[in-house]
Image 1: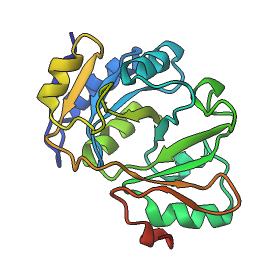
Image 2: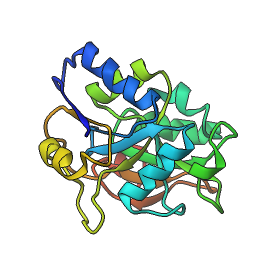
Image 3: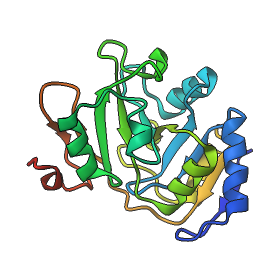
Length: 208
C-alpha cells in the first residue's frame, strides 16, 4: 500500500518531503509532480527499483529514462557537456526540457541507452520537485507516469494512488500538473536536434 503525502505546491511541508525521500532511499518508487506532468521516480543506484520502474511503466531498456537534477552543476556530473551544449542547457534550465546527452561513468550502464550510452537529463522548474531533490541529495531516475496502454500522462494524484497503490510506495500530491510532456532535445551528436516539441518553447534554445 503506497503512502500518500498531500503537500502545498508552492510551500511544501518539509516533514512530508523528508518522509517521501526516506521511502526513495529505502528502494521505493514514488509518483511525484513536475513542471510537465506526474512522474515515477526511484534511486539511480538501485538496480531492483530501476527494473520495477520500467516494469510498472511498461517500457524496455531502449526507452530513455531521465535523471532529474537540482541544477546544471549536478547535471554536468552525469553527462559529458562541452561549451556549446552548456550554453543551450543554460537557456533551458530549469524548465520543461529533457536533454539527451552522452552519459558519464557516474550513470550505471543498465539505465543508459544500451547502444548509444546516452541518458535523458533535466532540471525541473517545480517547487516540490526541487525540494525533494534537495532533501534526497542526489538526482532521481524518472519516467513520465503514463499507464501501460495509455497515451496521456496521469494527472490526478487520487487516481494515481488508486491505480498504482500496490505497485509503488509513495504518491506526492501537489495538485494537478500542466499535463504536457517535456520538449526533448538531443545534444548527443554534432548539433542540437529537436526530437519532440512539448511544453518547453524550442525557440528559447534557438531551435524551431
